[in-house]
Image (cartoon, rainbow, N blue to C red):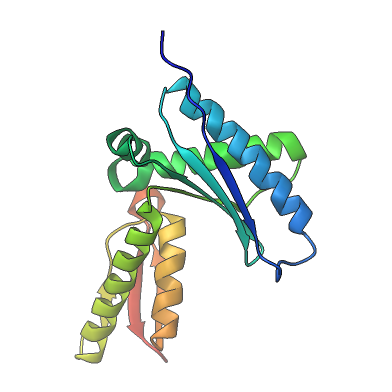
Length: 176
């Protein structure tokens, strides 16, 4: 029989949080409870950190000992992580009746991927500034496309999503 695991939960609420802070705190608590149950079922040790910032709840699962197990929860290109995030959002919806925009991260994957996406945006911008009329990026999910669209806009260029389903991708062009 597997040993009982205890998952630590740490909450950080910033003073500049808007009036919906209590709703976001409740959302974080529900999400943390759901994720703790999943970790217990999978017999994975992990600490769950909850942070509310910019009107959104951020949940992180970290562990010093279960690195390989947590990699499995991220999956190839973050596919399992995205699915867990959606399941966690559904858990919050079921408990509160409110849709959630919470972001789930496991072992810093999202931070590393965000840095990669920023570099992809910079590379596309360099190609456009070098004379290429448009750059089509590899397909990516909605969350990652949003990050790239924002990075492209900050670089003074335009971007548009094209394609359908798993082939949906971004095309970058010079600003009109």
